[in-house]
Length: 186
Image (tube, rainbow, N blue to C red; front, top):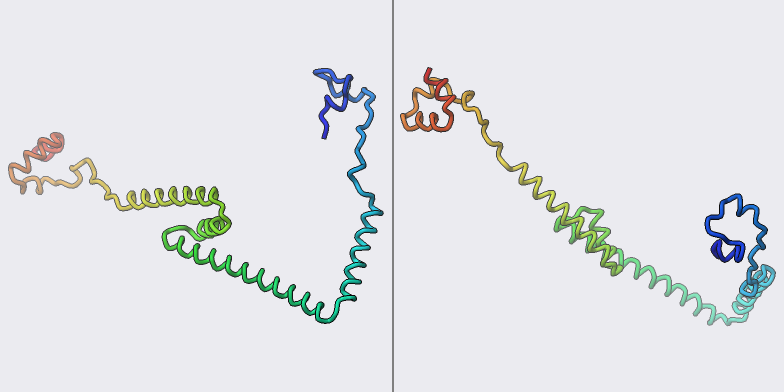
């Protein structure tokens, strides 16, 4: 596709508006037709090809026809075998990846990429897996972290409990929370 400057030639100026462009008298670009085949020639060639195939098949001996059919069947069996081998490899690789913690979709994606030799996809998927593992470990750590006790001991320590404490324990309450000590001794 030619750009505007090439199409307009000497008539091109910087900053042309749409109205100015519409008012210009421009010749349509000429297409080099030497690279194209007419539809009639193409249709004739396709028809001739089909006729030659029919003639070839008719001229083939029965043994040659059987050999050609056997070759087609063999090629189909080989293609099916290759497809099954690829599916088996992907399934086994996915199973191994799932066993180490990958989710099913990501494991399938990685296994397919490994079979295809697509290392970029494998690396991106590995990054997703590592991020998911980090989040899971962090979530587990947060879940297993005990809740610290409340900062105000007045709800947990009664006057009766305070009176039963030793002097060292009462002194500790005084040092840590003098307000609580004052409440309990009044």
